[in-house]
Length: 84
Image 1 (cartoon, rainbow, N blue to C red):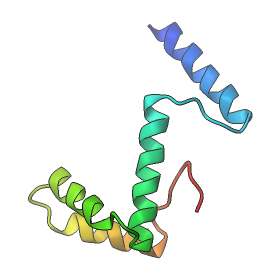
Image 2: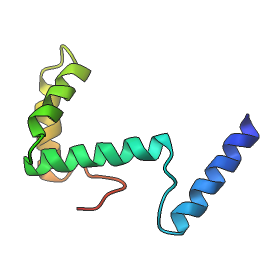
Image 3: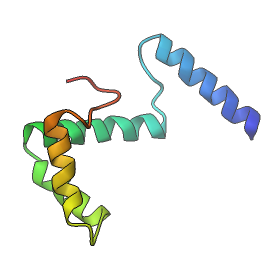
Image 4: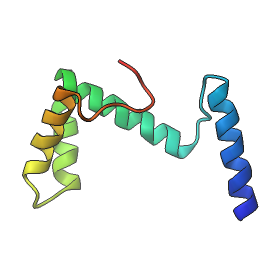
């Protein structure tokens, strides 16, 4: 299993050097997270759905969604894969 993971990481690094990451589950999640960050930063359509998802993900922590939105807008929470 360790060898398979090493080969997978190597393929990912090689694909990244070529300019396009492999469509792994982690890369897909990162791209979707980046899209959500950009939606919150610009208050684009869908921002309320993203805020609602944050509320569901962090129940009992009412300040998390608002602080995430503020960090997106200020630029302290930035996308990793996608560049605006």
